[in-house]
Image (cartoon, rainbow, N blue to C red; front, side):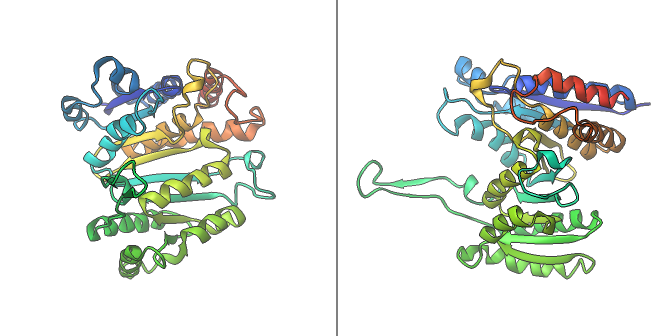
Length: 351
C-alpha cells in the first residue's frame, strides 16, 4: 500500500497564492509519478483573513496542523497590517510554538550565468546554512522606555540557552557528516556580543564527538565578506537566528536571487514547515510575474524530509536541468510568467 501524507497548505499573502499554485502542480505530479498519496488541507491565514475576521491563527487550527506531516507556506506580509503582526502571528507562531528549532537553508548555484560574482561556478557555491530558529532577539519582547520622548530607549535581548545552542550545533554536525567534505563553520560575534561565547564553548565540546568533521570559526562580518569573496570556503555553517537570517539572504543572491531560495523549518521527528524565503511582494499580486522556483524547491525539501528521496531528487533535478539547459536566461521577477516557469519544471519532471 502506498504512503499517504497529510499536508497543510497556507498560500498566504501577495504573490503567495501564485507561487503556491505552481508548487502544488509539481507536488501532485511528483506524487503521481512516485506512487504516494496526498491529503491537502488549505488554511486561509494571512492578511486578507485578518482584515476580514480579525483572526490571525486560531488555536483550533494549530491543533489540527500538529497532527499533519508537513506544512507548505507561500508568503506572509502585507502593508495593510501593522508591521510584523501577521508575520509573527503566522510564521513566528508556527516556528516558535511548534519548536521548529532548525532553519535549514541550502545555497546552491545551478549555472554560472545566474551568479553575480565574477568567475564563480556551481563547483564554488554549494553550501548549507543551519540557522537556529527559536531563540535570539527575535523571540524576545521589545522594551520601550520613555517612548516618544527625546530620552526614549528601546531594547530587545539576544538570549540563548545551553539546550537551544547545543541542539542546533549538534544538528549542524549531523548535516556535515552527510556531506562529502564534512566541514562545519561556526559563525558568531562572540568577540563583541559576549553572550555568544556560549556558542563558542558548546561548539568546541560537541566537536569532540565528531572527529571526522573539520571545524572552523568566523565572526559574522568576516563570514559575510568570505561569502562574497570566497564562497567555495563554505560547506556547512551554523549560526544564530539573527545572523542566519541576514547571511542567508546574501547566499540567496549569489545563487541567483530570492526567487530560487527555499528553506525548511524542522524539528527532527516532528512535522516540518517548508517555504520560499522571498517576501510576499504585494505590488506584484495577481500579475503572474513572481518566480515560483523557490516554492518548487521547498517542495523538494519537503519530500526529502518526508523520506520520499526519489521524488526530492527528481524535483531538484528538474529545476537543475531547466536552469542548466539555457532555456531560462533570467531569474528576475517578470522575466517569465509564474505559470510559464511552472510549465517548464513540469516538462523537465516528466521527461
